[in-house]
Image (cartoon, rainbow, N blue to C red; front, side, top):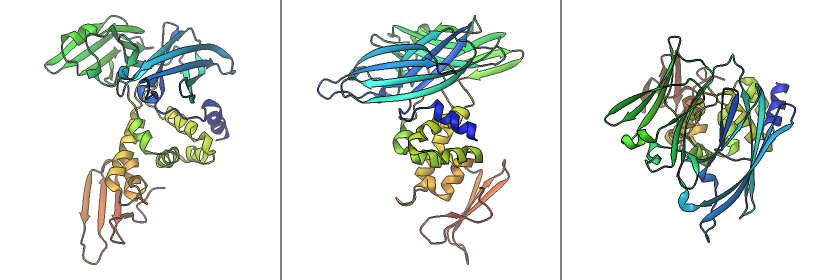
Length: 373
């Protein structure tokens, strides 16, 4: 536990830069680090409708030695903004297998504010299998990672699909989905390939890209290649609320560690928690994090009764966030000789939860003996 606490404090910065992310892919001894800055992070001057930023990056090894640094000058006009997408900056380095820390500092040269973020990542050795896929587009102004296929138009300067895996594949197939059907493309290499998809955009309205890796009769499939922003969740809930929500799914050691941190370290703890709970490391999508955010937002929508008890804090909200929607619901609003009740059945998990409205205000409390600590 002490070791976990030390790692949390050392790995991440205390300043919050929501939704900024990195994607790391390694092939043929070269590591590409893609830094994604969502356009929602930029603030524009009302007078000039423009923004001037400077972003510095520093890469450190496990000995805290700075092994690479770069500075990017960023000039943006407000009409260049691509809603939901992220501006992309890339660095390619020859890195040995091991752990690294990347520090980014984004300075607003017009308004003077600055935001820092730190990330950790590992360069895998030859024994680890990693899959990384993403779309990188460039128009006349900037490189970006799109949030939807509608943002990919045939007039782009370049548009490539990055396919990367450390596995030796028998074959790779890219399925391009259109309203009228699927176009199947065989990819010649197994690692480090950037496939030009501009011809696919010119064929029609591309609705999805799915890549399939075939290795020794095992098929690995990925159909999430677009940038995913968590802005809606991050804008609705404060950092302290996010930590309280994580309590529902964290194990005892994780929660004991997080609960002892000072407020200035909570952002670091949240990011570290999700880096440990990522079933698709290196990709643009953390399925578990996205599912959790969706459940919290839905619980807040379904179970909020009044301002003093948001839906995610209610007993039904806690179970919904932890377990998801029930398989069956049985309820009675006017039972004879009883309080109004709702029963949730989770057949696959063999769980039953009974909630009762003892005060008659629609605030259903979980009955003792049903709640899991």
